[in-house]
Amino acid sequence: MTPHRKIILSGAAVLVLLALAWARLSLVPGEAALKRRVEAEVSAALHMEVTVGGKIRLGLFPRAQLTLGDITVKAAEPRFIKIIKIEKARIWLELRPLLRREVRIARAELDGLSLQLVHAPRPGTGKPGVQPAGRPFTVKELRISRGSVAYAGLEPGRDVKASGIELTAKDLYYGTPPGEAQGRKLFFNGDLKCESLSVGSGVKAAGLKAAISDFSYLDPAGSESRTLFLKGEIKCRTFALGGDFEADGIEAAAKNLSYTFRPGVKTGRILFYKGDLKFASIKAGVKTQASGAGLAEGEISYSFDPAGKPYRNLSLRGSLKFGEVKAGGLDFTGVDMKASAEKGIFSAGALQADFLGGRGSGDLKADLSSAVPVYAANYTLTGTRLEVLLGSFAKSRNGPEPMEGLADWSADITARGSGAGELFGSMKGRVALTGKDLVLHNMDLDAVISKLERSQNFNLLDAGAFLLAGPLGPAVTKSYNFVDLGFSRGKDGKISRLASVWKLENGSAVTEDVAMATLHYRLAMEGRLDFAGLRFDGMTAAILDKRGCAAYSQKINGTLAHPKMGKLSMLESLAGPVLSVLGTIEKLVPGMECKPFYSGSIPQPEK
Figure 1 (cartoon, helix red, strand yellow):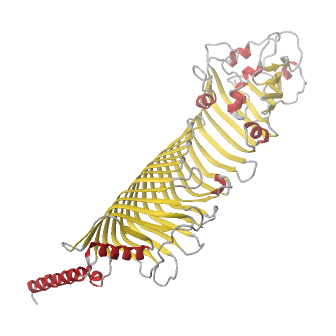
Figure 2 (tube, one colour):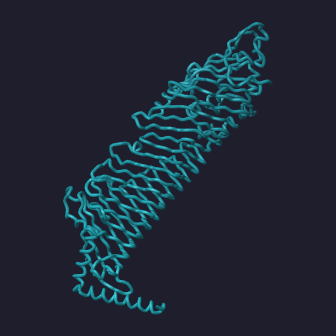
Figure 3 (cartoon, helix red, strand yellow):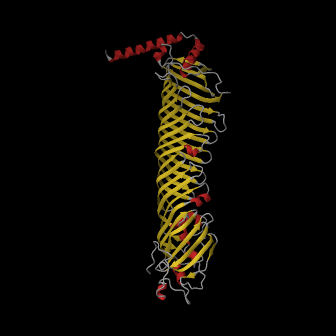
């Protein structure tokens, strides 16, 4: 058979089919009967009550199609009544089923669709819906424009509103699959847009877009769990949760986004997400901001339990990154961690971040599962600028910081409690601050110490004040005045080595290795700091000789803001000028012994 003959015969066959279809449909007497036929067919397929209030038109050219207006779909559920209104619908029908007086939809366009969920007066009341039929409802392509959803919750703050909905769904299936006796299932893939979405007054989203490769909704009969599943690419322009959380530029590559709930069970709702998640920017509260945030290969699960605390219902696994984070008055960049959360226990493992001019690494953990929170940190900050570290603790200070240079800071601590007082009082562990070749602005310790005389009233706390920056710098530096230390101004001094290592126990910091060396002298501290009252507890400051003995020493008590200084004392009471601490008492008093005041990591200067 020639190609031309095939074309002619095919065209003739189509004309015959159209003629037969027209003949079949012409047997339906009038528009009213056609409405009843369409209402019955669609009602049986959707298992809902469908009525057409507007005009209905049937056309066969170029394809069989129905045009309907003012459509209402109703279905009664045990707790609410579902109402769907459509301003205008255009439906393209499959031709062969039409010859058997069966309505099979190949394509549908619904304009001005609104879905309303209205609570019934009492559970189980309301007009019952149409019982499920054996044949499922299928559409090869469904388009919805100008859509909206409204749900009025019985409880305050549970209303849901969505507007500006645009949906293109392909291969849509709704009904009971073959071989299953009960329940309904909905499947499709396609694109979804929603201009605005709100849940109560707390959740607001705008500019939602989704490229869906797989969507399903499983609604088993009875009290079995219902599950909504989505896979695809999701974007959201803005998202807000209450007044404390805002996010912009959200992009999600969802491998599994599911929402499972059991009807009538408040704690039976679980939201699960698996995939990648990115944020252009995040705001949490007033002081915490982040940009360039991302969760790689993450898993997030949240159980909606009104009786439990939200953070105990959250489960999280994944690699979390932030380009920049501003929190607690500090700026962090290049943040990278292995994040996890389970039943109120949060941890950040292999945490790395650039801040305070250095690079930090370590692990953080917060256990909020019990009535008393427990926190743990094992963290090291290397190569930080000491002036930036001091400046972060005293934002109101004018002028340059009194000390600058490179330093390392580390902490291995645990604490428990809800407030600052409880946390300081329960803190245990170790903190350390070390540095080399530091500059002391406007304070030449070598010049001051070398001119000391016995009768001079000199404050050793001023000389060793920076040794206090190791243990919880914010608490100490905010209390002690580093600006007016009483030194001569104008000439800078040098600190060749500094170590400030403290053991934390019972709400106090105990000196472990606390000393610094200038070009000519060595200073050290010994004693305890009480964090609860921010007080000195039996603290002693000393200038050392080369054996580590205290050539000069001074007791310190009172609060950090108003310390009480004891009398400046010497190792041995001698007449005349104070002995030079460059040497030792043993040079002038042969055979004299002393108990070393300090034997830590800072050596005596060789000069």
